[in-house]
Amino acid sequence: MNKNPFSQPTIEIKRRKNPKGEYYHLNTKELLDAVRQSAHSTHRADLDILLDVFLERYDARQKELDSLNRELEERIEIEVNIGKKNYKRYEQQAKMAAMGEMMDAVAHQWKQPLNALSMMSDMLVDDFRTGDVDQAYVDELSLNTQTQIEHMVTTLNEFRNFFRPKETKENFGIKRCVQSVMLLVNDEFMKNNININIKSDKEIIIYGIENEFKHLVLNIINNAKDAFNERDIKERYINISFYKEQSYINLDIEDTAGGIPNNVIKDIFKPEVTTKEIGKGTGIGLYMSTQIAQKFDGSLSVENLNRGACFKLRIPTQ
Ligand SMILES: Nc1ncnc2c1ncn2[C@@H]1O[C@H](COP(=O)(O)OP(=O)(O)O)[C@@H](O)[C@H]1O
Ligand SMILES: [Mg+2]
Image (tube, rainbow, N blue to C red; front, top):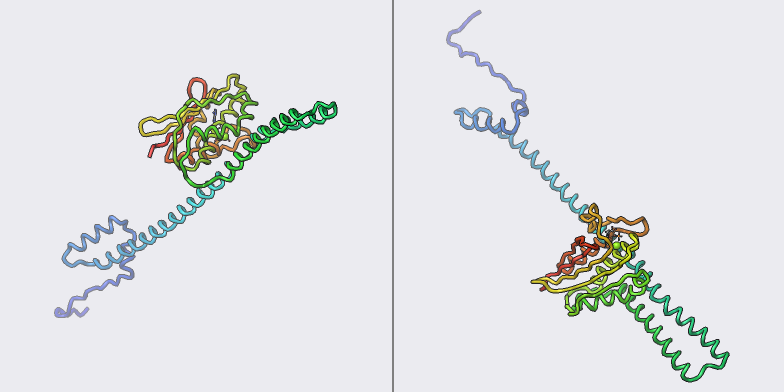
């Protein structure tokens, strides 16, 4: 072989087909180390290539992250919408359940005066036949009829107010509100031998939607009624007291129905938690009641006392 001592040494140029590809297998830390080494070496070989690989990877991650974020936002929106829809559904169910319970109450409330009216009209026919009807008789009959009808009208008005509620906030008295609920359920609770006692004398005024407050009270006392009946309790009392304590107004509704079983007590304020048979319970009542409590900036809790459950509503004074 003819060797020319003056010729340039042949430099073998290795063509690297895909220099970036040589670095793809590195993990991010290794890649960063390689960037660092290259940046600190004198000829900085491959620094650009390494940085390109690094940036490509960074862009790809960024895109992944963006799309994950978007997905997350969509998921959150979907969940929020489901939550809103469920809430509306619960609200509707609670209204329907309350309406059913109120219908029962009104039916009971009307049964007695309707019977009385029917008896009076029978008696009138008989007494007229035997000639016992004079002015005094008619006056008394008229008075009695009026009383019965007034009773029915009052119930009906209460009932109407309950379901065509004013949605505006206003000042109202707790005592008056509880009494109005009692008026509605009076006959039904009497039929079930349940004594409701209001233990507090002094009226306390609070601010909010009165009707919602009535719903809360109704939900709680109706639950007590169910518990009395399910368990066949002999002594049936519901004691209601309200009082101020530091910067709170408290309403305690205590029953003698034996209390809430330990395994359900922590869940009873969740929606659709019920121990009742299908058709008897929806599990919505107490959930809605906590929502109502929150609208008053308050909270609802429960504890088992000696003889039964005690529901406690706490509302901060403004
Ligand atoms: N005063 C009470 N005594 C015993 N258990 C109660 C009482 N109040 C509520 N509970 C329990 O809490 C559950 C949930 O009540 P609620 O949300 O009103 O739904 P529902 O009455 O439709 O079952 C009831 O099924 C019952 O087991
Ligand atoms: Mg209930």
